Image (cartoon, rainbow over all chains, first blue to last red; front, side, top):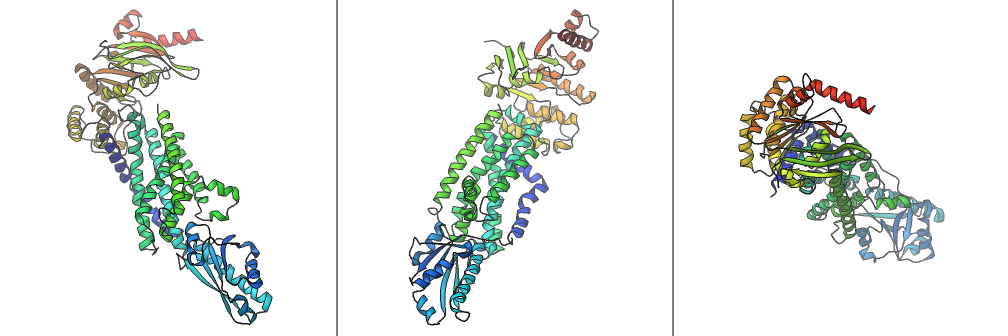
Length: 365
Length: 247
């Protein structure tokens, strides 16, 4: 093992753990944040994509489908998979809900019998799932009211997949875990490198025979390790305290997290090359974090954003990582399901990290 | 092939149209204490940074410890020690942790670091404060630690950029005693300073002004030649004369 590299890593860890306040900031604050954000408020949802399985195929059933478009809450779509595999389109993320109309729909409605339609929701987006169910109940009530009067109820039976209790905390925790990992790696990396500039130790290191590559690795890897520890801690807390289900493979999540770190460490490194004080680095890091959070699908589903903002989200690595954490934890998504996200992260990571390390080497002479 | 510790020819460094260092040439012999003088902004630090491989020259060239400054900066780094005018140890680490780190940076193993730390600790009298965070230490003690850090790998040449700035006279005297001992052991010392009494300790000096070397020689020869009372007077007269000529 390279002695200089080990020396750097050891020094970095001593520095992090010497600062007692820093230890609190890194390990305790995120848990508090987890508690607070775990119960964040509801948001309005529109344009929920709705797979329609119409087994009745009558004028009446088509009228009901059309009525779901009112208020723009739903956009009815034609299913890609049979009703037996309807969860496939959820796992691929192309649909958010499915409506099943039984074959005796119009027959029962015209003979005054109660009818129940099925509504299946993707519970990984707990917010959309619970709001969508509410909208559907209203639409059904109005439909039966408008045509037949009050006493002929059309009922909706809900079924929420993946997150049966539609717990928003189940949906928030994976997202918060993604956020924490981003904060630790972007913010701490950029500040740790800029601090070396501020104290003059960077110059002192540059007159030693340490190569730029070794320096970068020794500087970046300790924060990658801290980030992974934090990730594990937050996941354990989510699963044990909030009882968030963890359906998929933890190993896959850890592997893809390491890949995601390539992009965040690269961004942190980039900020350290364009700034000369820790304050500036912090400003840049926060600006990025807010941008990344808002366009990640954390608060607002990406499908609900205006089209041009949706294009911007493709540049945001956190967007993909958000889909990865939610997909693995809640839906049990496998590597193949997450291939598009994985490829996007590899491209962004290689470009950002490569560009930043070249820039760093040139800047430091 | 020659035996000069440092030899540079027409070395220049331009930042845009500003000539921070403008075609300077000099040689430093092995085991010599060479003083590099000049007012603030004269170009001393820029020149030192080029010699240490921190800055790429705009023109000219030379060698340090037998290695080409343009092509072999990695070899040069193994053979020199550098102490910048800015305190450059980690303030949140103790002296020993700093030395451990810099030792590893020079590729020393644990045993070597331990032995060298012990040796330098005795020599520079670091024992009483080596296990305290450097942040809490007086400037003079920090300078001695920084010197220890730059000596860990037994460099052939030591570059010191205003090493005694802000240090009281007693510490400065001690510091120079150490430098003399090192020079006797064959270490070449290239030092910039503001203090004229320190310049007098050097075997030879060069004076820089606006990127050029305007005077060079042995301190006492120079005083005699220019019929000055001391180095300080000589220095001030010289700079003033230059400035009047420029104006």
